[in-house]
Amino acid sequence: MSASDKSEPGIAGLQDDIAALKRDVASLIEHLKLGATTGAQSAAEQLDDGAHKVCRGVAAEGQRAAALVCRQIEAQPLVALLVALGVGYVGGRLLAR
Image (cartoon, rainbow, N blue to C red; front, side, top):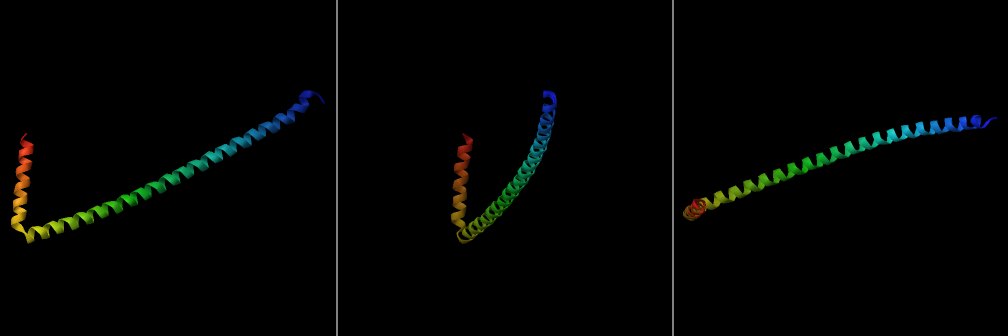
């Protein structure tokens, strides 16, 4: 056997190993892509759910505050009128500048 005959099987085995490595790396990349996509979708859904909860909470708090203000105005209309006049006067003076 010559030296070139001995190296042929070694090169063929190395080429097979490289091909297997390429397949494994491609499979790993696909797996990582799928994992990243799934993770991003899950995070987006959690953010969406959280945003809806916050929005509902803010809306409910705004309705409670509006109801409280309405009750105060009904209970003390003269005070409410004087406060509105005062705020309007101060606001008008500040915006006139």
